[in-house]
Image (cartoon, rainbow, N blue to C red; front, side, top):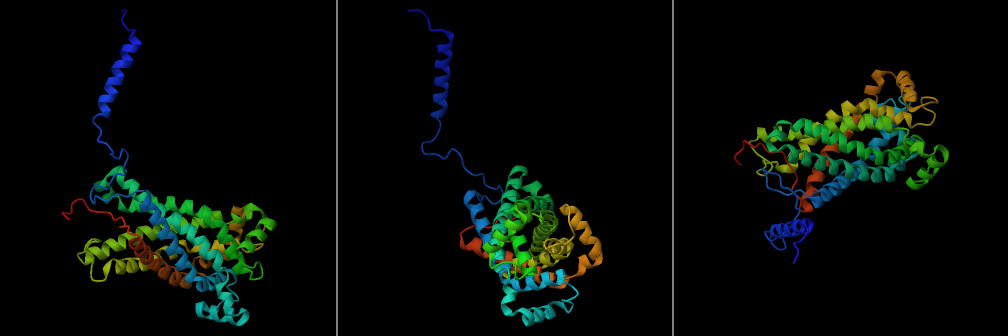
Length: 346
């Protein structure tokens, strides 16, 4: 018989070679599996990130919702410092006297909903970016670059989160500045859409990014550094926690991180409150309006109006967030990622 053409000979050879490769594969083996972090040996997969996102949404919605009365007064001080000129306690008294106790819960629905979404993407995103950077560069290099990794992960996660937060924040601020504006979150969305269009929801995207991105970068980087300092000072680790426990470390480092982040982000927070006030900054592009507002208010007032209540609010809020996040992660059966020094023998 005539010999087979070369193409069939090649096919026969390649098929035999391919089958020999498959013969070495163990039956029922997982062909694709998440790569564990080298030092800890723990696997961080999709389920871990979903748990981190859920814990982030829960902790942010609870803490921001609980502090709605403080945020209402803080926003009023920023919007009308002449009227609300007697500090945080005086602001509470003025709001209650003029509008009743219920006014302190203005914007609660937008706050809880908006910050659940933001927390989902922020905390889940930070875990995702942080862990995958560590996987790509290794434990030793990651330990040396802890702070830059925190900063880059927080910036990326917060940018994504703010795209979803901005419309809810716009409705919240409008309802706080004008209590007659709407009857709840859904009504506020409809009214803003009719009066200003989709662009109205993103009028504050510039200042919200300017506020939230540096705030979140400082929040996670400072909290990480403070937690490491506490563990170092007590001769402990997350695996062998100090007497106050990992929850105590989260709360203490959270307070420190919150105050630092509040100071850094306060000027942009004031601008965000003002730009969402009807007619603020005149007409024109958002950047022009922001410059007009900054010129009218002045740099000193942008940095100081409402700063004390914001430090109180953000300090307690951040401590609560990290404490609740760690607690929920534990309840969901997830072990939170921590940087590890490869030089440690543990």
